[in-house]
Image 1: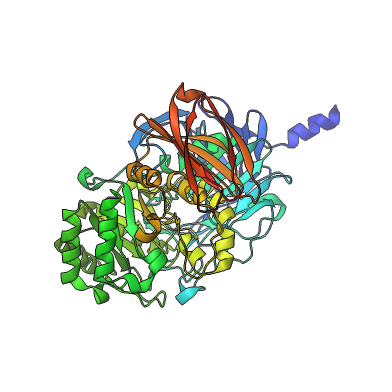
Image 2: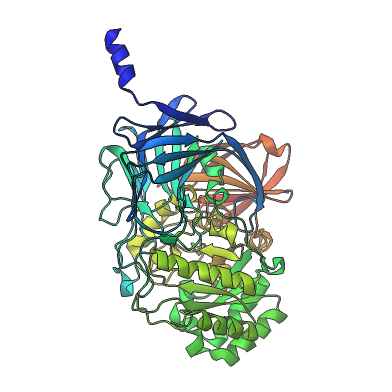
Length: 631
């Protein structure tokens, strides 16, 4: 008994235990015996995060140790509602308990930690108030998992490596179901979102609230003992001669560090990645039209960026009732403004809008594609916006950014603010994870930030790996943010043996979330599928109102349901080399009957049959999939 009493005296005094509105999640914040700010997270009384560090180090002030708790605010209930045009829900209702903790260092300087606890997770951020210059140096924030926890992580590529020095672009394969504490393949670390399983709970770690004044972060390579730390970008990840790390005159506030927590269903249906983003800026709602796009480059590559081919793809989009056609790189040299205006006029008559590609880069990579270096200054950009609007182009695809430094983040946000004001749609490629930007800037229809389908057309190795890679994406990259994977091929890929069945390809049209879904298939490939497949794709909604996670395992298989209006679309695919039997509880659909499209006997065969609620038993073919529609 005496030994137990001594142990109790040695424990740090608890600052506060903040709970979620439903009482399931609990965040304990305290200053430990080493005078460090620490926290733990529990769900349902079970540990999720072990004691983990908090704190910030600036050039002017250190808030990592030698700290004292000075004040704890009352708990307040944070409520808001917002709209998403390219998200898993069109209308989102947010409810979270929030509390602020003020600590002081030995010099009397103060740091405010703000913590939110929602039913689906936890978020925290730091603020240093007061006048004067504040220069970020490092961050102590960590996430400590039990030794038996598992991780699903994508390595961050080393800056200035890859084709024409274009890394990092968040374009690596995931390492699935690895022990926590496994070091990253290089010093560059791991990207967000990072997925973990801790006991019965899953945890997705990311960040949100990027306003162009802060650099983007990642998890450090070294996670010894299962403790992952926030790390920053490499020195070269900057706009030419720009700043790497955050600086501020006056108050400095970090982005939110976000943890979606709960059973896999809770994490998969969470909207925390956008809940913590800033509210939407004004955008003309008439331009915010999610939908599909025809796109020649995926299979036909550079030689197809010519007038006749692009006109054919406009006609293809019109036939498929898709609202967009994307004209890719080098259009300025191979087509030119006058002919682009002819294409835009032809598209308008067909009920299709034209999108045009731009190269973002200045000196930070060696990419040759044009228009290049045309967006580097405010004057440059205003000229190009006017040029596009005169031609009749409705949106831009901007490619080949230079990383995650503060100056590069500012460049992204300048483009976002300006295109919002101009009423131009935007798509980022060769880019960072958007971290909730689709809420703040609803004209950002999609972002690549993924090893997308194009890689599976380059090498057979990437094609063979794409099946399990695709089965990771709904759980990670596409969890919170729209993703321009550019999916779906039913026919042949030049010089590549396809690894997927057509059911797997068709399922991506529902499983992968993107405000504008750029389909890779050509008119010739689309002509090979039955009419009921084309009808399904013609009538597939471009915007979703609700999502339900029905079943799945990261990297193995997934089944999701998405609602648009009164219709429900259910889709799934199987990345295994053996058949998978799934029984779906569809009681929430009542007695509705639906249309099911799935794989037939051959790898390219698709068949149609009726399916009905309240339950459905399906056998998913190896590397196959299905879609179902309930009206």
